[in-house]
Image (cartoon, rainbow, N blue to C red; front, side, top):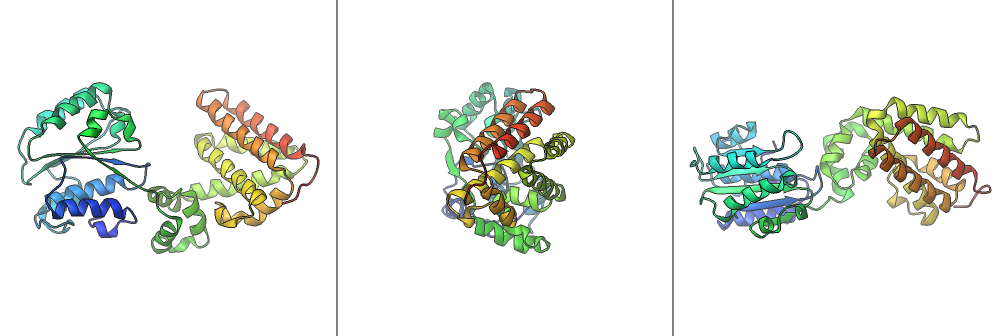
Length: 338
């Protein structure tokens, strides 16, 4: 675990707010950290817990005292982590938490509970948590992380400080990737754009050779859809079937490609293109397809995603998607102009 707020990329508003609360001894008994997955909620929750249990009592954990070492290894007796093992957080887990909370801290001034993906608490579990939020012991503290705070009871929200985590500017992520993964070269810019402003997603992509291989392979195949030879449809569909376990990722790649093509056709703004390393192919593709056809293809891909989520025949859904897309590309009456 990163042991300093100063080493966190972005989230300066959230971090400054938390440090000011620590400095002025006005830390709330309950926080809700809201933001997309991978944005840094759990990291900052752990850092806050470390700072509040650190023996040196600063706004940042010192990283060297016994308490900080325990936090770093995830073994601090007064910092507890809770998350659903089976997709939800049930009432029994919260009742166990309540019993544990009323046992005084072992070594720190506070006893801190970090509930990850708090939106997965059942209604019963949320009501049970509400009871302890209403009258917590003086040393008790909760940090809830969630992608959507509105999924929690309004009464829980009203008794907590809600801090919303913002996505990072692409420039920040790009700089981070250059420093942490110097071997990426030109891929840095693409990965920064693909991350959607989420640092965790950028790290996952940078560390995944499979991700980059799948992306390259699927773009080679989508580019070949310009060919009048229908054999390209079989190749593309077979690839999707072979890598069925990554179907959502492959479909997202397709959507990003056609989004980029549409941007080039409509605005010529390369700064908005995600797959900037494919810009020459994107320009050529845009020359051969109308904006109307691109929009229709995007609809086809989105519809395919919904069908797959509904457990329709996967191979049939993919084959139909490529046939319909190919027909849109080749049924537009000839070349268009960018």
